[in-house]
Amino acid sequence: MKVIRGAVDEMWSIIGQMTSSVFRHGLPLTDKIAARTALTNFVLHIHPVRVRRSWIRMSYTLCLGGLTFFLFIVLTVTGLYLMFYYVPSINHAYQDMRDLQFVVTFGGLIRNMHRWAAHAMVITVWLHMARVFLTGAYKKPREFNWGIGTVLLLITLLLSFTGYLLPWDQLSIWAVTVGTNMAKYAPIAGPYTRYLMLGGHAVGDATLLRFYVMHVVGLPLVGFLLMVVHFWRVRKDGFSGGL
Amino acid sequence: MATEAADRIAARQRVEARRRQLEAPTTVRDDSEDEMIVSFPEFIFKEFIAAVAMTVFLVVVSIFLQAPLLGQANPGVTPNPSKAPWYFLGLQELLSRFPPLMAGVAFPTFVIVLMILVPFLDRNPSRRPSERKVAIILFALYMAIVVALVIIGTFFRGHEFIWDWGWVLGNPQTCGGRAC
Ligand code: HEM
Image 1 (cartoon, each protein chain N blue to C red):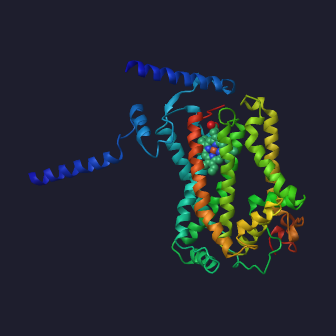
Image 2: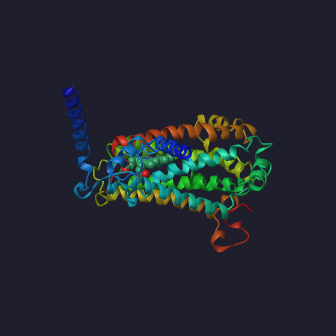
Image 3: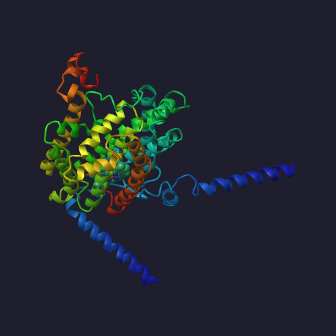
């Protein structure tokens, strides 16, 4: 009996040690514990430890910057799932999309989520920009972060655009044909730019591979790095707070 | 040791003071009523709720709304009209109205550069909406034009990208802006 009780106690203490190794500070019952939790937790450390009540009013940011970032995460996760089934070649791409839609477990749902989250991100990033403009939050000392934001807006559009080609259906190749045709009007560089984007004179196998590589590696990587700088600057410039 | 700490505190106060100075003309809020709170858990909880709401919204939409998948790409068959994705339809709309060099290159470049320069062009230090009427009106105009162009491109451009009331009038001949 004693041996069993001893073993149970030992087990509880090991479980306790495991829990406290993950959650170092217990419940945030006092401000001090809460502050220490925010400081030492990886997920929370991007946030300031202390904020003014007016900064976190939803009526100020409408959560738009945060939602844009959250959508980026959703897109990364759902995109990863799609990548397991998708081969960026004109012989496979379309059939892979159909398989995703009709055969793969949750394939249709994940594909839909990826698509609608992409549209939603284009909308939230515009609205976030509108919020920043209307609250005058781009003024000194945040001029630079506004510039980074503008580049992020362009990257968001390009991410959506490169993704548009990947299903390789009638909608995608013609939308991309129209879109890349716009590039060729630039003086001198235009036709070369278009050739560079397409990897040829028309949308084809090379285009699909180029768009795929930019869509899953190039643009997300640059976008993520810029987001990191963007968030860093929000902290270091000081949040603009309420009006 | 003690002087080092004192130096550090003094330095921090100088930075703080400088920042307040920089911000001074643009700061219109009254902080006395505005309590400082620890961000965890209240702030984090709000973010969490927003994320959950967005997830639920996406899942529900994705269950009921299929992402489009048309027939396999066929370089030989050009749909008419051929349209760019909706967020580029404003650009396509401009291209259908102005010379390509202007609509496709000069104009977008100008807008992007202008946007990046906004904080330097807007010399008004105030952040109060009532004191920035011109800026707000110009911005509202910009947004209204962008939205209007996208709506026109999406719904009012039919065969050959020609103006088409089909979407409003339900004229079956014109397919309401979509590919026939
Ligand atoms: C991928 C795109 C973007 C992401 C993920 C993002 C994210 C964020 C987040 C989370 C914040 C904190 C405050 C808030 O939520 O509103 C913020 C602030 C800010 N963003 Fe963005 N943003 C993006 C694009 C942009 C764009 C397009 C602009 C403007 C052209 C912009 C300009 C700013 C500025 C100036 C701030 C500081 C605002 C303040 O202190 O009140 N951002 N951003």
